[in-house]
Amino acid sequence: MQIYLRMAEHPYFFVGPPFGYRIGQPLLVHLISISLDEDIPNAFYFLTTIFTFLTALLFAYWLCLNGSAFFVSILLACAYLLSFPGAFTLSAWGLVDAPLHFFLILGLIVIHKRQWIWLAILLFVGGFFKENIAVILPVAFLSLFESESFKSVVKTSFLLTISFLASFLIVRTGLCFDWQVESSISATHLTKDY
Image 1 (tube, one colour):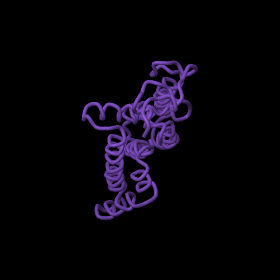
Image 2 (tube, one colour):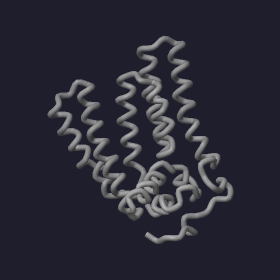
Image 3 (tube, rainbow, N blue to C red):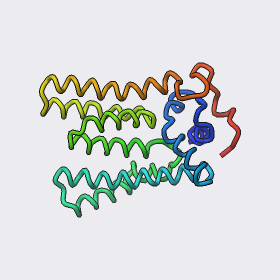
Image 4 (cartoon, rainbow, N blue to C red):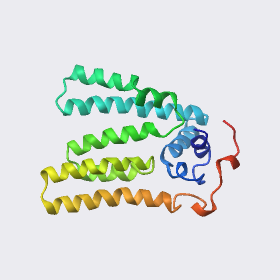
């Protein structure tokens, strides 16, 4: 948790793998703390809460898309908030799991609607938040194989893979940091204690 707080303080300095590659949420926290004149921990909690509740709403929507009754979908979304993923995310607000859950559920919705360009964008953006967004790729591939022609499967699979790899490589090559990955600083060298 401390590393992500320090990353939010200095989002363009690399703090070491694997945490330093997950720049999305610390960068958003940094921007929120500047624009709302809020301290970093409060901005983290605010953003984590927003992502967690949006995830619950998207989960209810996804359940409705797949045939669940509205009331059942709302109950299951509330159950998500009370379950380990939801409750842990809200209590451990300095981690980057809340955006990952959001992007995963949003990815399932986009796959359900077969909006492959939006999924490519989601994979690119989600790659800056946490590399585990890649688990949505096999789901997309299976969905493609189920309903598309072979040529379309190959073309769309390539697009989705390249989208994820682009963000994956941008953070791993140090292109989004002031200092290259090889000359990184550790979290202990940053200025503020939380």
